[in-house]
Length: 204
Image (cartoon, rainbow, N blue to C red; front, side):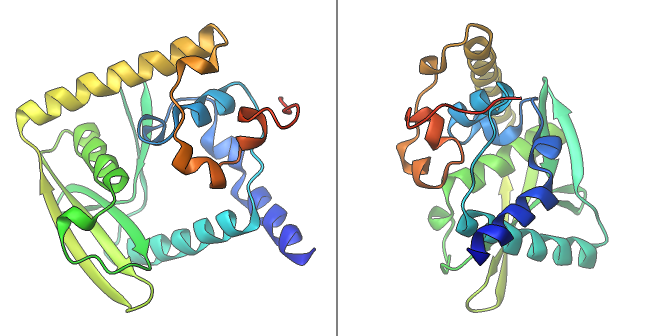
């Protein structure tokens, strides 16, 4: 089918393995840790057309906004964990998100987006970060500011180290069951075919 040809083309273009690699990333601490396990072990993700298309739309918006701000994506490493910060604003980390759901209050922002920003603040050694939300339906842009205290940053660092060590230990002893599942992510996960034991996975 045409959509699968497009999906494979997008996946090849993104060079998924080369850009994501076998190192730990910020998102591994936020989303299902089993994804990190299977990726580091060398399993190939099987992403569907809709997931890839959604990613592509978000990336296109990111690129336009970053160009408008005059900044490129910033790659960082902190305590052995890698992260790509979308951009900078007033010298602080800026994360850019696209949405089709109107967000009028801070408590409506997905917690994963907040966690990404918090880690961005930690990695850059700042106390403040910004979240830029682009509503694809209403074509509106909203900027949210977030500030963390010293105690919050210390606790976040402890959380990072704890999650990092658990994932690396699971990889070392070949035991994915050490890592908690995030069932809400299964439907769009590229590793569900092996995590659920539906078929043998492919490794490098």
